[in-house]
Length: 245
Image (tube, rainbow, N blue to C red):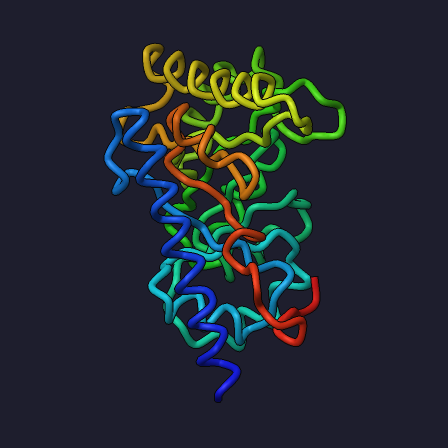
């Protein structure tokens, strides 16, 4: 119990620092901090940390591997929104839909087809999804090519009525060059704006899921609505708090 209280205290302290940085980034961009959702990425931590995240006041958690997340989510008592943020294999779609509220990695029409079909089996009327786009051009990253986006969004809207398009997601270029990182985020915002202008996405659901511990401030300056934070939230936690992942 003492360790649990200590974990909550550490996360609460780190969260206060993160919120101050979020507010500063929003001020620079002329944005309202309320428009930024912080997703606590818990993939390297166990249920105790998940519970502590909720106790510290965060309502959103993110996991990227079903086999690691499943036992933790089955044991989790806190009421939070569960975001699946990793690559999704079609044969794991039904279970992901049963365990998670939102998917951030819809990256191909074949997956959209499976999500739409499995939604009913999982008892879901709709599934909120971010469409992943590879804005950095790096071969190591998943996601649609920017040139494929408009056509893909149109097909999803026409064929897959159980998919609720929440916005777009990207991973920044893997580099220390802040200019290249910013360009990745700028490109996603431009693609979102183009999709809205073309009627493929409504402004109300034009979210941008982008930015992690090392680059979230740049992402916010470029319009991020959802940031995925792991390392910066857990700095100072005891090693014993880490879980499988």
